[in-house]
Picture (cartoon, one colour):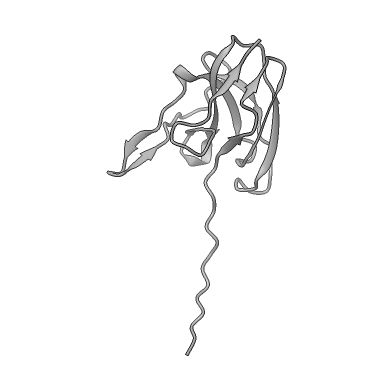
Length: 133
């Protein structure tokens, strides 16, 4: 006797991965990710939000009731393209504004995720972008 079990496809987490890690102001920061219409920010590495320990053995992203806005230390890069679902993968290209040279991280704000501030990259500490003149 054979039994066939069908399960629903699990939805992927919302997030970004950068493919450009060295760029000049005015240059293009490229990557891919998902999150229909979600805002994406550049923030100095020393001021970037950090995941914290939660649920006994896990880590959670910090949360904000509202998107960080356009004020310091966050610099709005743009919004991901709107898609029919938050989980549709897409490429992005944002022009880097004039900022001081240094190490930065890219953060996505996910409203439907409880206002999570999600670092770009597949590791707990995210990816670092080096901006140089």
